[in-house]
Length: 499
Image (cartoon, rainbow, N blue to C red; front, top):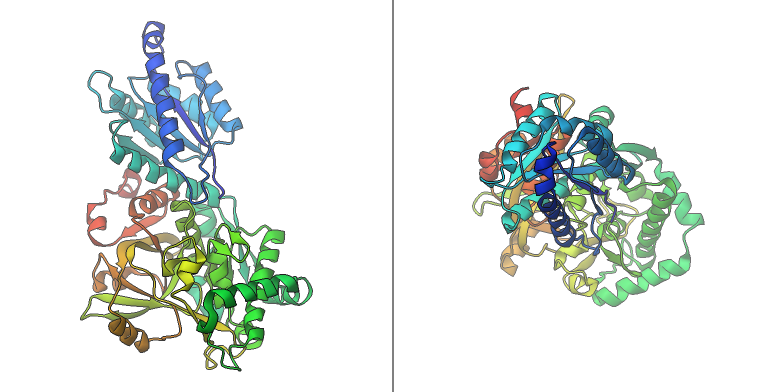
């Protein structure tokens, strides 16, 4: 998975008789933090971000410039400024100006009376904030696992922001059915996140399917599905046939080809109405794109949003990086069941099959999956709809939105709930039993959700990612709207309070 290098440096006192005594201990602290990050911040694929340690503790202007240049030349896009003792705060400027002011900065200190790193932190970080630089602060014991997790959450946020900054979103066909909340709002997105968009007509995918897709690869994918699903591919001889399923596989392969050639890091597929009425339904291709495997084995999930919902795709890409590479879910906000305080979130397409059992073994997930004939009423070209109920477990749900051209993100904790089979079946019948479902319980009320949520599509990922997403929003200048008790506990940073 793509990451950006992390630079670590420490400021110290400029007096030689001071730094000559404490520099060995200071360097040991910096190296220990580097090792904690390397060992504790593994991605799903086993990789980890590169950690670059400044060659010296900063004790002078020239050393500050030197270390800043080292980190810059090493490609560091994320900076952790460690504090272990009192330092001379002005030294932050030759360092930060050398490494670059556009990097997220974490000020990280001990809480030690004899060696007052937190005093140096507040003096130095305060100088940066005076000049309008958004920073975050963490103070705690270097051996405390809770402090480690807080640092990891901050790094995940910084990695997500600095990685997506240089990515391009491929929008196949434009926003679907006039859903304006799914449009790529260019200027606010560029200002906050840096990522841009290239729109390509869906005709390009169709011609790639017809002219460039390897039919041997199509057959390989088709056999894989038949082996995994057997009679759970519910052929009806009209909407779902071997040929319409193969057409969906061709679309998946075409998206992969065009993504690679155009340099798209994530994408969205319009689908309705051109593809769904004249080519095929996008459910299977979108599932495969978002999954961590296909018939050729493990792979990195590539975010692909249904209906080319651009702000859904951006949210999904951020969730992917926040989690170190997990698949993300795309859902319609479909039905609230007040008697159960439960949501039934379902959508034709885009549920990564990984969520059926949360397994990296496709066989485990596909045990719970059926391929149904596409609904002719909506999707005349046919193909398979993917149906399963998401496995139970902790979830974080989010969505990027825009208020008066200003971006914000709604964030909430929750869970996917396992229900008794008969109850689950009855609930699914109220919406569509041939689509994938998440039976979601949120840590917020129906009224709070309804009053602030930006649109009809919600995104989700496994685990508690609220703090990391909040850090990310604060770094990017996106207002985080955190719902439920987590929102009540949030302390807004100074730059929000001064608006």
